[in-house]
Image (cartoon, rainbow, N blue to C red; front, side, top):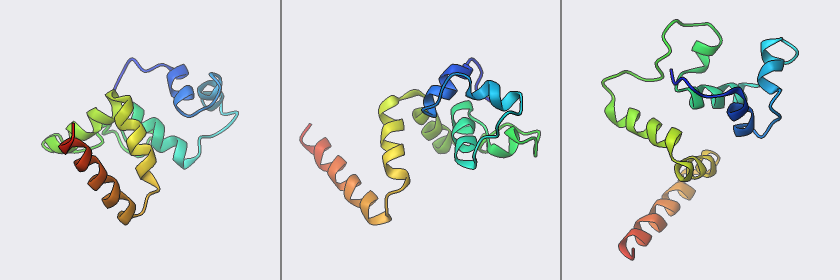
Length: 109
């Protein structure tokens, strides 16, 4: 699991106030499933780990280098996070069109 991530960073990533994580810790509120997935993504773990349903914080098998590279890219690159957020609710056809546009841009770069 990724360490060094602040509660403030998590709250800001969710578009919420800095007290959000403290409210969760004090059980004043509970994260939604979407928030829990996003926090798990930021921390490089799984919602199941955060809920205490597993002792394994790893979000993917260690031998899956492609998935690890993808998750690292999503964690470390703002542009990739933006692209991923835009694609989350896109239809498969929308994704194919976006890929075609990106490929065309690369050809002209």
